[in-house]
Amino acid sequence: MLYTYNKLIRDKNVKIMEDKGCKVTYEILDDKRYGEELDKKLKEEVEEYLADYSVEEMADIMEVIYAILEYRGTSMEEVEQVRIKKRNRKGAFKNKIFLKDVEED
Image 1 (tube, rainbow, N blue to C red):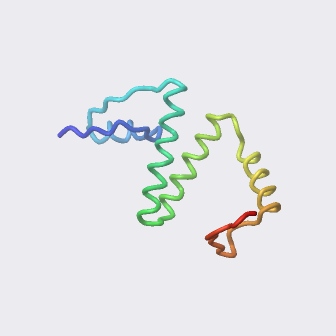
Image 2 (cartoon, rainbow, N blue to C red):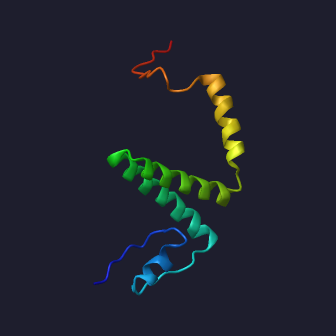
Image 3 (cartoon, rainbow, N blue to C red):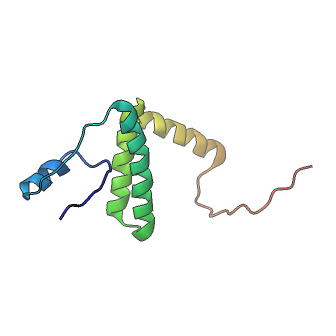
């Protein structure tokens, strides 16, 4: 039976499938398409996480985030510095505040 996926997969998945006797068709993406597919993959993994809130799906999100950081030439340390600055300036999400309305003059 033929299954069509057309999506970015982890590096070792092709070998894993071939070791199981599957015939696998794939391509190596150019940089532009790789960036586009990473964005799609992030959305896919977030949707899967929201379906069951599993630690495994959260780990998949993190793996995609690490790949995006490397692709974009950003480090986790840089992201963490920005996160801390924003947290110090605006706070976190611990107080469960849900903004409803703001009226300005």
